[in-house]
Each structure stands twice: as C-alpha cells, then as structure tokens.
Amino acid sequence: MKDFKEKLSLVPTKPGSYQMKNKDGVIIYVGKAKNLQRRLRSYFTRTVTGKTKMLVEDIDDFDYIVTSSELESLILEITLIKKYDPKYNILLRDDKTYPYIELTNEKYPVVKIVRNTKRKKIKSHLYGPYPNATAARKTVNIINRLYPLRKCERLKKDLCLYYHIHECLGYCKKDIKEETINEMKKEIIAFLKGDASIITKKINDEMLKASESLNYEKALELKSMKEDIETTLKRQKIDLNNFDSFDLINYYTDKNYLSIEIFFIRDGLLFGRHNDIITTLGNCEDEVVEYLIKFYDKGVILPKTLYIPMELDEQLIEEYFQVKTQKPQKGKMKELMNLALDNAKEQLDLQEETLKKDDLERQKALNELKSLLKVDKVSRMETFDNSHLFGTFYVGGMVVFNDFLPLKDEYRKYKISQDVKDDLGAMREVLYRRYYKVIMENLTPPDLIIMDGGKTQIEVCKEILSSLNLKIPIIGLVKDNHHRTNAIMNENFEILNVSKDSNLFLFLTRIQDEVHRYAISYHRNIRSKGSLSSLLDLVPGIGEIRKKELLKKFGSLKKMKEASIEELMTVVPEDIAKNLFTYLKEI
Image (tube, rainbow, N blue to C red; front, side):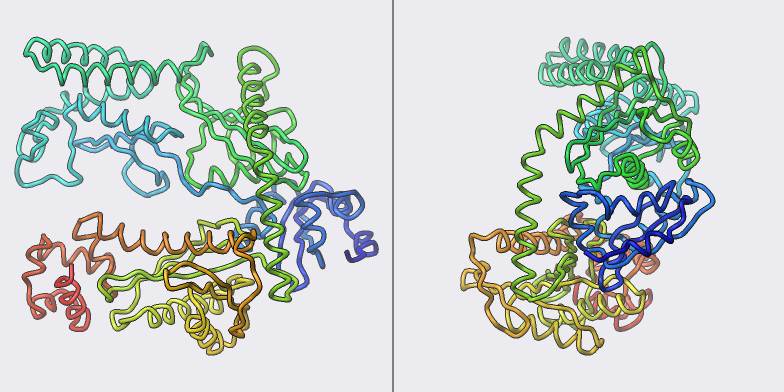
C-alpha cells in the first residue's frame, strides 16, 4: 500500500466527491463525503477487511473535487459513477425491471403489462410495481376476461375472434358509447386500487350462468379466478387505516454485507417487497443512498413519499429525489419499519454463508488467473459468440463480467453484414466493431478477452487488436471432439495448467455458457416472435424506418416472400433488397 500521509494532509475538510485510481490511472471507486479529509483518511488509517481491503490494496492514487454542499457532491458522485462505472461501486445483482399494469388513457383503452415506464407515450394509469410478475399477469388476464376492452395493438379492418367470444366490443366496426368505456375504466381502476367487490360480483354472476347452462368447466375456472383475487388481496392488505402510496426502506448490515429491503405500498396495499444484498465498503448510509438512486433509475416509479430509517440523511434524499420523506418513530408505521428491518436481517442470515463462499471462490479464481497470465490485475472480462441461420444471417453477442460477476447492462447484440458466411468472419466483424468503438468513444477496455475456441479464434482476435493498435490479454477456451471445454490456451497458443475441478475452470465455463446462451437467445427470440417486424430485425440495413415502409407496402410475410427483388427495390436499395430476398427464401 502506498503512503498517502502527505497528500492526505492537504485534503480540505469540505464536502465533495473523491475518486480512487489504480496503477493504470483507471477510476475504480467514486464516493462522496461531508468531510473529504476525514473520509479519505479512514481508508488508510483503520483496519479494513473484505471488499474494502481489496479496494485499498488496489488504490495507487486518488483525486477529489470540492463542492459547495452535500447535495452537489451526491449529484457529482452519481454523474461520475455513470461515466466511469467503477468496479468497486455498487453493482445491482438483478438487471430486471419490475412490471406495472397499465390502463391506457386512449379512446379505446387497453390493459397490459409494461416494464419500460420511461417511454414517451400518452399518459396512462400505472399500477405497481409488481415484484411477483405471475400475480401481475393473472390480474391482467382476469380484467381482460371480465371486461371487453380493446385487445389489438391497432384497430383491425374487421371483427376478430375476441369480439365473437365476447371479450371485445368490436371497436373497429361498432360505435361504442363513451359512457360504456368510462364505466369499465372506473370499475377496473377501483379493482387495481384494492376494491374487488364489483369484479367479485361479476364473477359470481358468471359462475351462476355457467352452472345453470351446465358449463361446469367454465364455472370451475371462474371459481379459481375468484380465489386468486381473494388470496392476492389478503396478502396485500396491511392495517394502516389509510390509503397512502409510499415506499418504505430499511436495511441491515453485518460484517461486509448490506441487506436492503423495500416495501411497495400503493393505496394502502402492500404490492410487494424487494430485497438485495451487496458487499459493502463500510459507508452504509452512503451506499444505501447510492443503491436507491440506481434502483429507481432502472424504472421503478418514485412515489410521493419515502419512509426511511433514522440513520439516513432526510434532507439529502428529499433534495435529490424531490420527494417527501418520513422517519416513523412510533405507531403502525414504526411497526412496519421494524418488519422491513426483520426481513432484511432474515434475508442476509439466509444468504450470508452462500455469499461468503461465492466471494471466496471468485477471489481464488481471480488470483489463479492473475498468476497464470502473469498480470497484476484481471477484473473486467469480455467474451463473444455468434449464432446463425443455416450458415447465413449471423448475429453476435458480447457479455461482460467484472470479477466473475455479470454486468448485464453492458451486454451487447450485433447484427452482422450479409456478406459474412462463416463463424470467423462473423467474429472478426464483431471484434472490430467492439474495439473500434472502445477507441472512438474512450470506453473502458477489458483486462481480458475470452475467446470461445482455441488457436484460430485467438488468431482472429490478435489480428483485430493489432489493426487497432490495442494490447489486451487473450485466452481461448479449447473444446474437445464432443464440443466440451477441456483446456485453456493463452495468446501464445500455450495450454495453461488449469484443473477442471478448479474454481477458475468453473467460472470460465460459466462465462462461456452465458455468452452462448445470450447469442442463441438473441437469434431465437427474433425468429420465435413470429411477427414480420421481428424477423426483419435480422436483416442488416433494415432499421425502423425501412421496416415500417416494408410493412406498409407488403403487409404480410407471405406477400413479401412472393415479391421479386425488383419489387423489394421499390422500398429499399438494391443490395439490401437482394439480402432481404435471400433471407426470405431461407425462413
């Protein structure tokens, strides 16, 4: 560890943001402090363990920026974290967003599940978040079964099946009164806010009709639907004597781990709870705030009020999030706060041993990898794979791992030129595009590139890096005749001495499995969606505008398949028309 005594003596006692750097000058951690000198001294003058110890051992230098207030230092901290994505800052374990139920505010409304709440569209009624996606889907299904809302994304030219089974009023052909639609919306909103009386009555009426007509199968289905509603509402009900909407946050820390618990309360109902456990650097209050910023930035809609524990900075949170905060000290809200704390502790107790074991195994694997490659640092790893359709129409995928943990927000998909007819050509294009972008946009390069193959794959990677004047270590995962990984090769084409039973071999094969899954899923998902719009996504040169023009002209996959190259050229250029013609003959 370097001696920072002299430099620390010059650090002011003012608020600000600080940036820790490794020996390569890369920012590895960004923090904030009310008192910069006191906070920075704490890293180098106290006994540290776990993640903090790893950070301190990695620090070669530090910088700081003085600010006029703690809020300004928090904003600066978050800005720098987003810009540099430092390896020691908080990593959200789950990249998924929670679903909401949306009742659109259109002339003919639709009820559906949405996850992207930041999209710019017409105003809608949003209910959630629903941590239990199955419950959200069941709720939407119940509403759509009982209320004949519009089911199509766009109105069709003629009445569809939903009209004939009485699940749509036939908005495309029929003149539906506004009063009828408003009455349905009113009942649906009441149900989504926790009043199931009207919907329960509807189900009872339908059950009676089904029984009288001897349709016992439908009656049983309706009975199950009613039980689902009653069970859901029973679980959601909490005794608060009000219908407020808020999120309640608490946390529990033990040794090197921080367990964060969030309760989602909407209109007096507990919609669900969220828990995450992260390794901590010991600044728990700051790390909880940083975590909340990242969490809400992923799409969870902030309520007007946040209930927080006493330890958190109330003013700072209010100023940053522009919401009201409360710190309950007695009564039912204090009981609920204690319940959140108990849940946070319980989750950490359940997972702590597993987390410790996983952290230890990852660290052993990293140390073994550094030793084999004779390097001081291996943290960020990038690996690639391709998928194709009968040897044509390739797509590529890149996955990124940091200390053997996936960074799913940084995964990337690639559509590959139609001229490419083989795996090596596809890999060559993806590698060039990736690392050309790294140079042009000054992105963080990886510490290691992992190739899904042996000598040939490594040669392609070395060729691309050389053409871009980049020097990044490479390893290849060599497969046997059964397409199973059985050895690890370095960039000098030497087989490394790695036991197949070692943690390193296990983690590397996990990365290999993940990139393979990611690339195949990308290709398969596009095709399995079955829509013409989705299938066109595989054709290079066809973006959103050309896709819309093709859909407008041909309308269906069948008609597009029957079209000649000349007919396709009325919409797209000749080279793209030829690619599209070939592709349509393959699918």
